[in-house]
Length: 88
Image 1 (cartoon, rainbow, N blue to C red):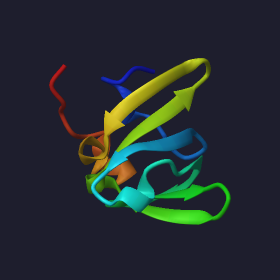
Image 2: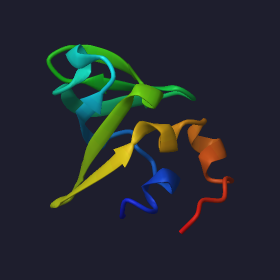
Image 3: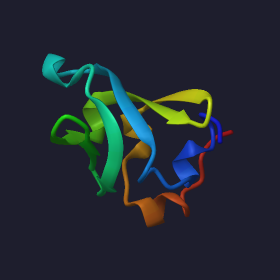
Image 4: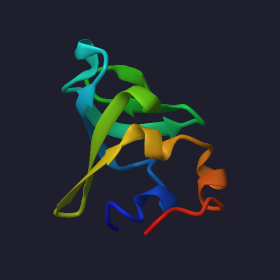
């Protein structure tokens, strides 16, 4: 899994951290992705957070790699993102 193809993978179960966000209180939230909707990610850690995808830059931990991605690239239902064509 790489930054280019993470949009086609399942995000539920991955460890995520908010690196940058337009709302300063969101920065630093980390935990596991519990659920995903069209516009939000639900992250469970110290508590459960519902994070809008379009305002955050996220870092996912996959094995020993860390992948950063802008949340705007993740907008869309998980099953519909598979059908989208992305520039490589």
